Image (cartoon, rainbow, N blue to C red; front, side):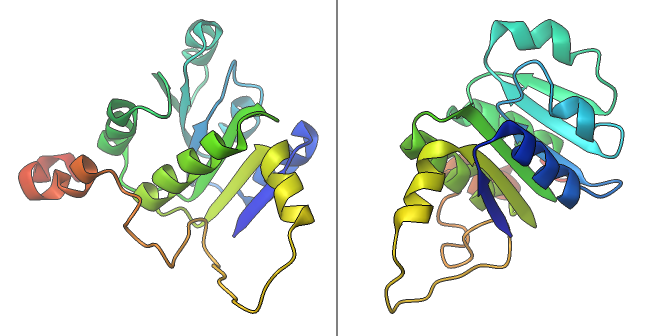
Length: 171
């Protein structure tokens, strides 16, 4: 399931509804951990953010592996991939209302790579687009947290090759 929202309270409640005990959650755009702290007692969180304020705040939250960096960079995806090759929930909050194109690209690449059961995206632009669009005769739907019709096409090439030349990265 893929959920879109804008209000941060709705974003957090949607995530808490989906997250189950022992889930692996990848959270992109954790900032100082407001949402992370709500999920961490229940599950394992891999949190990524490039803001300097996040570094000190995130290192003291239990059950969280923090990766400082830009979610658009290949080496950051690769670092997360070394930790886990899949996730149950992908949470994306890259500034809430800004850059829907960037947010969608990040969703596409990270969800294709980690194949989450559920994704929650907080972005006003994507939500407005979704709510304003009318559906044509073509019906593409997914029941997972990634776009099933694209399967592996969004995975960065170097990550696709990990298991070919570095099988020790697999757990």
